[in-house]
Length: 106
Image (tube, rainbow, N blue to C red; front, side, top):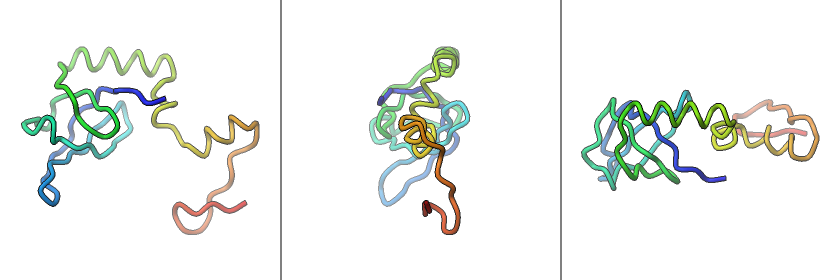
C-alpha cells in the first residue's frame, strides 16, 4: 500500500539545490522533498506521498489522522520492516541480520 501520510517537519535543509526535510510520521522519521511546499518550516505538518510533501495540514488534523492510521495498523504496513513483513507473508521467521548493515544472512 502506498498512503499519503501526515508528518511533522523536524528540520529543513538545502541539499544540492533541493529543499529537503526530516519528517516524523508518528515515530518513524523519513527524508522528504519540499519542492512542492518550499516555504514549509520545522514544526509544521504536511501530507507526504512517495517522498514529496504535497499539502500543508494543521496539527490537529495531522494528529487525528496519524492516530487513526496507527489504530488500523496502516503505519506499520507503510513504514514497517520489509523483511519482517515478507517473513509474515510467507509464514516464516524473520531472517537474522548479522555483519554489515543491510546484509542478510540465511
